[in-house]
Image (cartoon, rainbow, N blue to C red; front, top):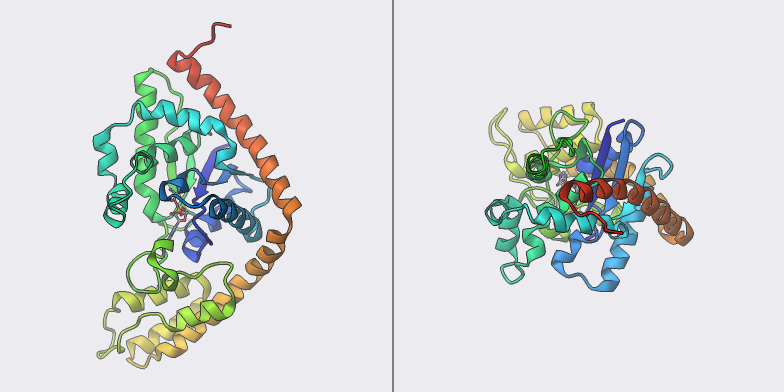
Length: 332
Ligand code: TYM
């Protein structure tokens, strides 16, 4: 069976960009592939969270994964730092990752632009660690949003380079995956681009937030003064709201608002109310399960323990072969 790997950094609450870009695919893939889904806690250390925040955030994402519908009997759900083989393979793979290619990565450039005072080595080699997450399970498919595409390309590069260097056919070439036609990019509410945690509180709709908070954010989302001529192109911030509707509203509802827009009869207040209403229908069951799951310490501990065991079994098989391939062989 083909193997699948994907992860999310625990930097706070999951937003609907994480859900529709990644988790929605996980939910279906867990029944069709051999899946490894994880919480990328080592990755999140690049931004120096406090120990208490880090632990709390990992727990939060674990509960959100389960609340969204990940079934620990169907997939392997684990915490990255529970698998020391990942750190070992990261050390080996770093020897064949070059400064030039790491500096050219779009996400590295973006991160040093945003945080010029924290350009650490972990940030530079972030794509190596991400590649290792995927290669350590010798995965074929990686369900991610559009923003991760370049990292998957780099993963192929590192895996192929290893195969070439040691003249083996060891790592498969992983492909970014989505059940939709293209990789997903969920827009934020502030009109500035993709929904993201770093875009500020107002930009993102979080899975676990109350209805009142989400509704308020949607009602305050940026729009323009309304169309002036029939069938005119929508400005980005308005198109963003229509894109968000695509995620949770019924097609005939979207058609009606589209027709109103094209006839210059749209009322953005009504559109936002509809979006907030349908968003709540979608989010309510996830939030309710999340609240219960977060309280259930036994369930979370058990899930993490079972996941760690399954992920380590897979990763240690890979590491055993990697050590042999690169010549790290025991004398005893
Ligand atoms: P992260 O934690 O930023 O995001 C987790 C997942 O959510 C997707 N995503 C989005 N999709 C669509 N629209 C958006 N606005 C949006 N925002 C986030 C991301 O594409 C991602 O799939 N480097 C990764 C985590 C990671 C990983 C891996 C992923 C570490 N190792 C191995 C896959 C395989 C990251 O920072 O994602």
